[in-house]
Length: 283
Image (cartoon, rainbow, N blue to C red):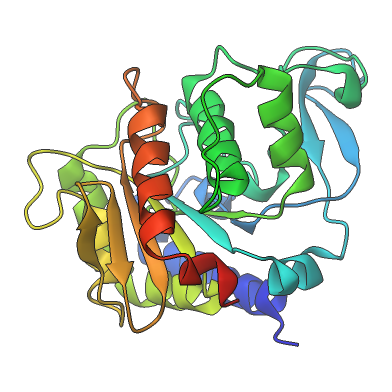
C-alpha cells in the first residue's frame, strides 16, 4: 500500500524548509518563521483534544483532532477520495495551526466534542461540511437534498476520510486576492504539484471560482490542467471531467462565500453521476 501520509509529510517538511530559507532575510527578528507555514493534507481521524491559549489551561481555544495512525489505510480504501483545494489559512496575522486537526466545532466550548454542534456561524466550515455531505451521500440513484441538519453534516465529516490542501501555505488574513493566490501557486508550483498528485484524489473541490479568472474561472482548476490532468467542462460550469483518468473537478466558490450554492453544486454532481455511473462503480 502506498504511504500517502508519509509522502505528504515529506513534501511538507521540504516545502517548509524552503519557505524559511527564502523568507528569513525578510523577517530577521522572527524566531520561528516556520510557524507561519500551514501544514495540511488528509484530515486526522483520531481522538479529540482540547487546546488552550495559556499554560494554566484556563483560556480554552478550540477542539482539535489527533492522527489515529489509520489515515493512510482509510484514504487508500476510500470509495471516493475527496480533496478540497482552498486558498490559504485566515489567521488574522497569528501563527498557523494544522489544517488536518480541524473539527468544525464551536471553538470556545469545553463540552465533550461528541456533544457539540457544527460551528455554523463560521461560513467556511459550514459550507465545507455541507458540500462534503452532499457529495458523499449522492449516488447515481439518489441526490442528497438540502434537508439535513447541521449535526448530520458534522457526523459525515467526522466519519468520512477526506483531505484539504491550501494552495498558498503562508498564513493570510480575511481576503486572499486572485493576484496573491496566482503568485503563490506560480512560486511554489513544484511543491504544490507534488502534494496534489501524491494524494491521487478522485474528486477535486476547487474552492476559488471568480469571474475575473480566464479559462475555467478558477486558478486551482486551471493549475490542475497544467500538472497532468485534462479536465473539460461536463455539466454546466460546475463539473469538469478528465475522461482518461476518470476523475472530476468541481468548480466551486470560495467556502466563505455567503451565497455559496449547495443546490447548484450537488444538482450538477447528481446529473454527472446519472450520465457517468461508471465514475463511482469502477473503483
